[in-house]
Amino acid sequence: MKKVKKIDIHVHSVFEKWNFLEQNSNWTTPAELKVKYEELGIEKGVQLPLNSPEGRFQIISNQESYKLAKEYPNQYDWFCNPDPREGNNTPNYDLSQFLKFYKSMGAKGVGEVTVNLPFDDPYMENLFKHCEAEDMPLLFHMGIKNRTYGIVDEIGMPKLEGALKKFPKLQFIAHSTQFWSQISGDVDTTTYLRYLTGSVSPGGVIIRLLDTYPNLMLDVSAGSGGNAIMRDRDFGYWFLEQYQDRIYFGTDICAPKNEMRLSHYLDEAMEQGNISYIAYEKICRENAMKLLKREIKL
Image 1 (cartoon, rainbow, N blue to C red):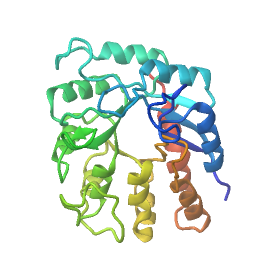
Image 2: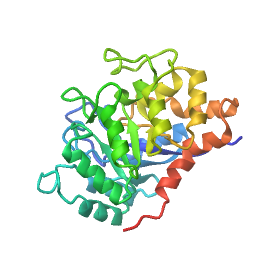
Image 3: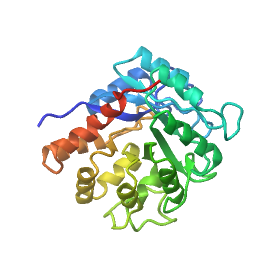
């Protein structure tokens, strides 16, 4: 079977790097990303702004992300990323006005949301409400208060579950170590911040949430998502097959030095018959194309 050209749901690029960090560790330029994509068999990626101060060291704005997609249309689509504290910094601000504008400029979703507030915080629920109303899927990083960036939850992900239940028409695309470690039933507060190895134990929260809430989708980018899939091969093959309609391939390439093993792993899994070609095609390309090519109501 022929390898497909992949669509990357998760990438961060800038036109120009700032030199207060080592140049090989801070984002990619379009030229650098093109080299990485050729190595990995990727056609194009979804540029994700990092518009909140929790995100990292160099803000990536909505405007810069739009300009990247406009200047390099064969390499990038883009999501927008309004911070829920924008406007007049109240939890009932009409964020739809931002979303409508960004949609008119070609944005296909929202993310990567890195705000370090709980899922049930009024500011976050206001963002979710407007994303749901505007049919804008939301890609988030899950974090811990004052320790990592990302929307705050705890072991067992009760706050994410509450959001999935409260906003059933909003597609939540999940990402981060804190999220992906909970694919295994034996994770606890001492281990869920790590890239775990070895067999995946039954009873993982992720499985239960997937089976209960159809609006939960998965971003398998970075070491977090990739590791969750690759750490236990038999389980990983089953998981990819079982949830093939819910998974978006991604890289989360943040710098030229990043190594991304999942692309070749998926190719090999398909070639060796460990996952079906249909599942491979959906995960690597078709699920993302369905999201990016959908008709968006302005």
